[in-house]
Length: 255
Ligand SMILES: [Zn+2]
Image (cartoon, rainbow, N blue to C red):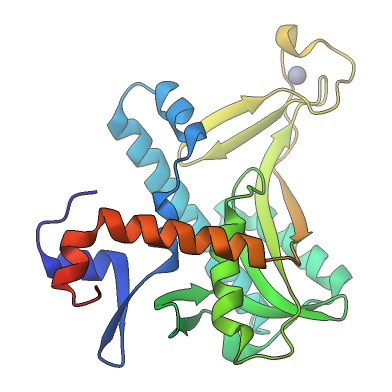
């Protein structure tokens, strides 16, 4: 990423809070290489196509985030038809799990004054009798990289929220399943992607003339209680990010 001036850098990389600028967690964790991204781009026709898919997919993710956060606050938002299966699955899951949130901590801006960074928390939640950070993802899987981000939220909240016990990733997604071979079809960012069945049934996947089901929502909740080692890795990444952005960070008065 190249920046043309300090104001642009500060705006894209951090938050101004009470007159002080802090880098943001999601920007810092971008320093970590993601080899799967190379494969993603290699499968496409152009770099621009990849950017367009990522952008569309991010706005679909935002729609789901906004709807779920409103539902968690007890509201009944209007649901865009494109995300209806995801939201239905979430409602069913929420009912079953009886997820409670602290309204003060939905889309809450967090600052770690000691280690000097800021971020926006999706929510604090009460699930299965425990209080923890809940981060919502709309990806096709739960990736270990997410633990870097949520460890930074844990560390920022640790001192000010003593009852904090754990953290979760809540993954919300939607896809179709082949009724003949169990393959899945996922449409994200304007692109259709077929994936081989996790459990093989009936027809050979490679030869199957797929028969797709209706869109169905998919919910996965995973707990990651131990965050201290992830946090050490986050701080290591932060150091590297600072090294890479030294030119701008000096201008921002951060280093
Ligand atoms: Zn099939």
